[in-house]
Length: 128
Image (cartoon, rainbow, N blue to C red; front, side, top):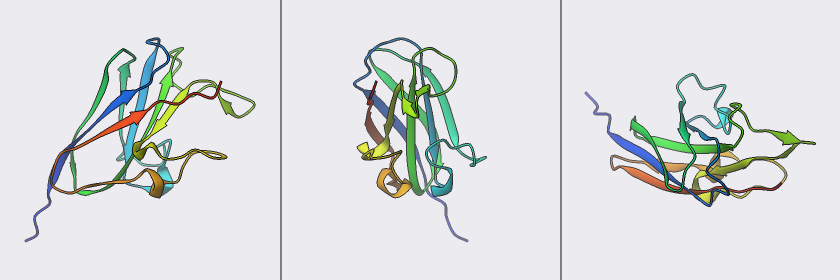
């Protein structure tokens, strides 16, 4: 019988421009469901208040490759506001994945969870 290893996953959010609103976070193993996680019924989502020190705990997950996407929902409406397709609120991704003409791929943001707790630091970015 095979053994499934598990570990805790958490993230620290840095470079918030304000402490208004909330941080929307999702953790997924599915490339087709990244970055919004809506297509993954098993994605772990969290909503935490914005603050000077933000830590998001996703809890215990099975070993695998995961990616995290964050939104700084400053007005608390539960979504990333945009102006002409350009984000008006902050966003961030695990591994500080680069943003070009749209969100990064799952592969660029993915990190391994292999039997040991995984803690990532995610820098919030703002365009407008």
